Length: 238
Image 1 (tube, rainbow, N blue to C red):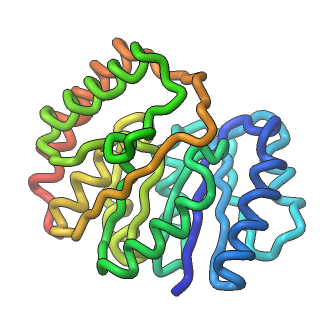
Image 2: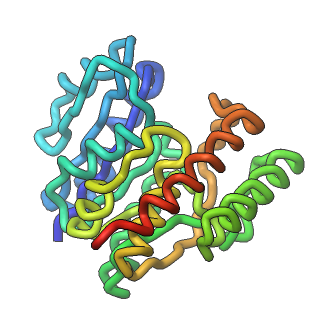
C-alpha cells in the first residue's frame, strides 16, 4: 500500500531544507519506494517552494499557488492531488516527529480504519514542553469545540491526521473551510459518511510555541464556522 504525506507550508524557508532531508530519508528507509511526499506552498513569499522544487528526490512533489489561502485550503489541495492508499498530513516543523507516520500507517492498516486522528490527550507526555497555562487553555479549547461540534474525540485539533485515499478524497471534496476549523470540518464530514475513526496517542517532539492564532478572535470565528458547517453537513448526501 502506498502512503502520501502532505506537508502544507507558508514562508518556511528557514526550516524546509532540514524537513526535506529528514522526511525524505525517513520515508525511503521506512516505505522503500511506496510513498510520495507532497509539499503545498500556500502563497509563500520566500524561497521555500523553490527549495522543494529543486530537491533531488523523485518522490517529492510540489503544489504551489500565489495567493495565501490558509492551511485548510493547502491540505485540501494535497489530499485531492494525492495518489496514496493512505494520505496523511502534518506540519512543516515535524512537530510530532517522523515515527508517527509509520504508526498511523500500521494502525490504519491493522484496524481497517478510514480516518486516524492524533491525540495529545491520550499520551501522558503529549503536552510535554507546554506551559501550564497553555496546556490548560488548549485542553479547554478542545473540549469547548467538541461540545459545540458534537464530536466525541479527545483532541480534534491535533495537527496530525490521516485518511484512507478513498475517504480522504470523499471528505475533502466537500470541505469549504480554508483556515483554523478545516480539520474539524473534515472529521464532521467523515462522521457523516460513517467512516471508521480511530485515535492514536501522539506527543509533541518539536514544540513550536509560536502561533498566528488569536485565541479570542479566532475562537469566536471557529464557533461561527462550526455552527454553519453543522447545518451544511447535515444536508450532505454521502
